[in-house]
Length: 79
Image (cartoon, rainbow, N blue to C red; front, side):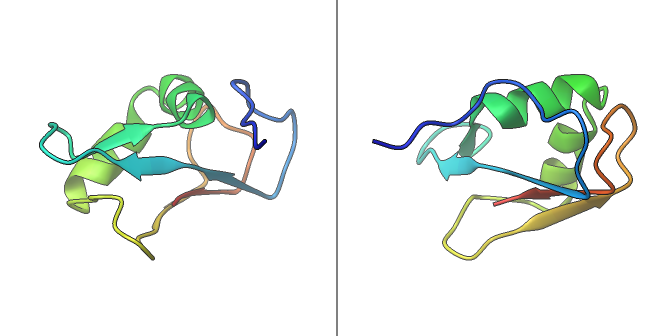
């Protein structure tokens, strides 16, 4: 079984969080708990970046945020 943490690591160079496709939903993806935590910590920057990129969580889709405020990681990748 695979589990995903609901909290963010204290210190990392890059943080990768998961979003899964949610057909027919708006937005067209569902964020894993760590992605929700990253969005909250960044003051909504994750959700804004995903909307600006028209992210749909398709296979191979990645959105990168550089030096997101409120997160110690230098890069945040939503996959």
